[in-house]
Length: 338
Image (cartoon, rainbow, N blue to C red; front, side):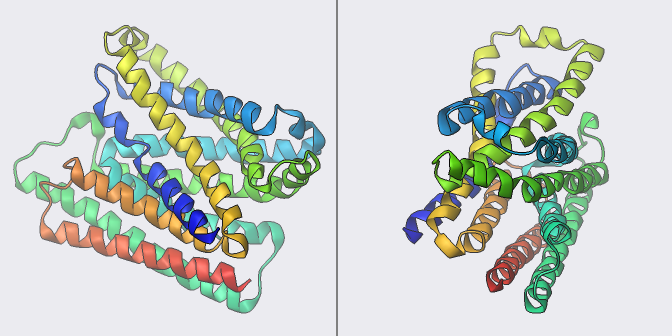
């Protein structure tokens, strides 16, 4: 069973690392068209279908105190804003940096948020997790330096940066701030996992489906923020007409893949954790996050994001990746000590 869990955690990480890749192949869509449609699908359509298919409907949400759902909803608004900024960051600085900076920031802050909900763990657990966070922080800093070095390399090579993307520094800031806001997911999960898990158990459902129940109020609440933002942007920039293109069906298919991968990755990780038993949230956590970052960075390299970068810039990128993977493993070990 444990090998099955490892494979599912690995697949979940790869799916999350690849989710934004189809965006590079959409045609005739502006940023607002692509990501607006993506957020509608991943925040509303996919969670509703998943809840009906996997939870048998929405009864589970009426079995917990409404205050729990409201707390989750408020935190999820922050998460939704953060994920929206993540999409913007990827558009600015590419897959490699967008993922590594965002995920790194989420890990840095998200790993300690549960402490504020459940209290501090034992000293050895806390110390090990904090050591891992320091290593992850070093990785985030290295990746930031890689991005700035790559931008300088492109300037030295006479390659003009797309003005619509803004500066590399701006993209890095968007990714980091987005990661900070996205830790609202960790808080919402810490608040809702227990009560919703009990409700899932009362309904006789598999324990891993708690993740599906937790994700529904998080995605719907975060999706409201994103939906309003993109409706305003599409209207202000008069981009609704861009949906009327011969590429609509191919674009929709690509964006639906993005939405499915983005949502399914979290549910698959929960399933993997259940198959890994006692080590599910430790070993699984490391495999999931590490494989996600590795996949995103490698896919960014494959599609040519770093073709104009010097060995110095790539060195920072690889060093940052190594630090993040090592840090994630240390954090997982710390969680395992608990």
